[in-house]
Length: 118
Image (cartoon, rainbow, N blue to C red; front, side, top):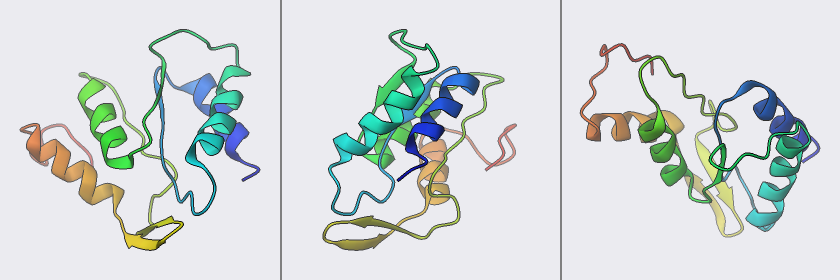
């Protein structure tokens, strides 16, 4: 919980575009979590429209990031990494950022080896 603002600050300093999304909200309102991350982002002085998006559904957020990316761009999916579940108030559910991203890339017509690393 204490790292949310720091993550937002790091994203504000280093990323051209930032998407804030779900990462194990458990019983906490997702809007509160996203507010803390966005506050850190805003502390960097970044406030331009079109640089930060709040997309609560993690699958939709990953899809948006991959669709926004152009040649030479790097998309970093942070927060879940090696984890195999996502936790909500009702329990934990199977999850893989890798599987979601790979499926979206396939749907977009990419194949592994098309100058992609995933």
